Image (tube, rainbow, N blue to C red; front, side, top):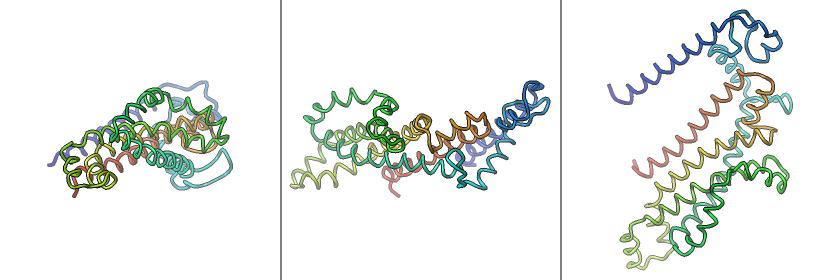
Length: 277
């Protein structure tokens, strides 16, 4: 039996144990004497004696199946399907992330290839990098005056730094012998960047891109909680205001699954670059 198969079996076993413990814990917590049927309905639970207010995995699974049957319904501003909410979040992350790629990678190349420019820009990078992306949200809302575009700007801010620093580090770490050979062969600086430096620095650049996409997906949830409107972050906050804990748990599960998918896509790209098939 291979290591991968054994790991998969162990993962399934651990998940089954988790679901079992969760189901048992939410069944026998004693009578709920102060829960009205209306409140229980909002909580996604059943107002019966001896049942916990926290939904169990069967309740979550049944509600999730309802969402999956109608993922793109639209009943108004505060009642949209999970497919629509995820689409808006992924679109914002994709837009801000793409802008960050277009800015960070060329600038990182410039910093990595020129120690002078690197030293000149370092104070600005060191000051701006530690600022929380959400701290930019009020300024973005004031200047841009659009919540969706402001969220994209915040994604750009949080995505740009890991890519910029990893690109600069990867470019600066390219073996000097390779660059000297290219110079000896009179390879121009632009061609040298694409044929020598980029292939050598690609794994480090993709590592920065992978870190950035994870941060971007984390930040979009918090940003959408602040700006409202649409998105999976807004969905979480809206369902919390409605006291629908079942929907909150479903949203948390989907946030984790989408984040894992985005990370695995870039991880696959990084493995392809490092170990081409």
